[in-house]
Image 1 (cartoon, one colour):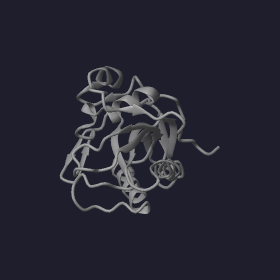
Image 2 (tube, helix red, strand yellow; image 1 turned 120 degrees about the vertical axis):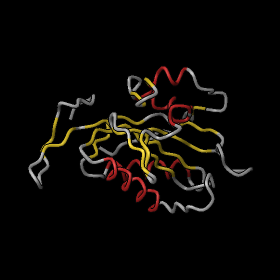
Image 3 (cartoon, rainbow, N blue to C red; image 1 turned 90 degrees about the vertical axis):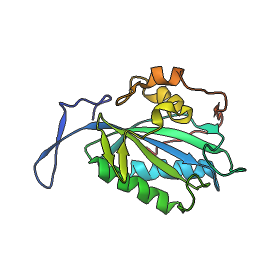
Image 4 (tube, rainbow, N blue to C red; image 1 turned 30 degrees about the vertical axis):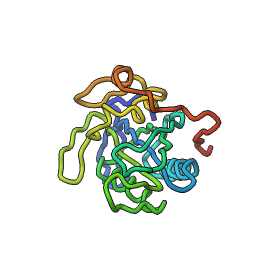
Amino acid sequence: MTETPNPHIIDADTLTGGLRPIRRVVLALGSNLGDRAANLQGALNALADTPELHIVGVSPIYENPAIGSPDESPDFLNAIVVADTTLQARTILERALAVEDAFGRVRTVRGAPRTLDVDLIVVGDKVIDEEDFVLPHPRAHERSFVLIPWSHVDPDGEVPGHGKVAELARSVDTSTLTRVDGLELRLDD
């Protein structure tokens, strides 16, 4: 596995013998119900246990108010996970949804408080615009709680169609975003 994605690096599919490119994938973790830090750590552990998803970076944890949520919604803890993978984008999305479900995510009102969010932000330079699946994540390029943590682990990363993460991070309002010192997500060795 390489530290940076390279579209010319391929991995053999052990079942079919076909070749698949290794792509950089970025996932955003968020929680504003229950033990928020434990929810994020559990999500990281579940992602790290996913075959063919190799975690290469985990951001610091940030806290911010809920955006687009009902009044009095608790603040979110957020982090970014960067990985390399040969998995298809839809497979990663299905895994993200399964991890949310395992942590009791209930989908009711849009923006309602939740135990866990696992949002698929980008998969390489893939662009998808389907009814149930959009890549890159439609608002990632304007959200400080995605861009600032991402810039810590992959400042040269890009949001397809919008630009480099480091440049985008300089253009967002960070007045409500706070780095949480003393909390850290850890990969089990």
